[in-house]
Image 1 (cartoon, helix red, strand yellow):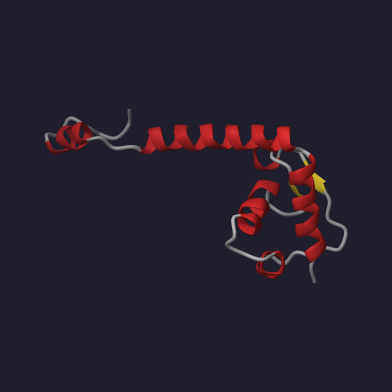
Image 2 (tube, helix red, strand yellow; image 1 turned 60 degrees about the vertical axis):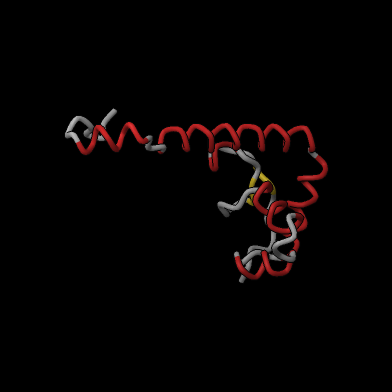
Amino acid sequence: MAQQTARIVRDGVMSGEPHIAGHRISVRQVANWVEGGDLSAKTVADRYNLDIADVYRALTYYHEHPAEMAEVRRRRAEQEARARKRAAVTPEDFERASSGEFDGAE
């Protein structure tokens, strides 16, 4: 049975993003899924074993805290950009690897 008394919390989980208590599902994710047009609130609730009220609480929080959510989106974009940069392999990396100069531990 889905959690009946979920709250939106900010703690050390999920890099401090507001999320549904007891779940690793952020307010930002719920808003993206529902308002991005991909999923209905009911589908999100069913798929992630949430009470439908949990989904609406997340959407309410998203709209009641626009400045905070803008900051969350900004931080998330920066984290993703840093991760992409760390994971990027350049043509020079391939050349060094083929010549035996690159060990991947830079």
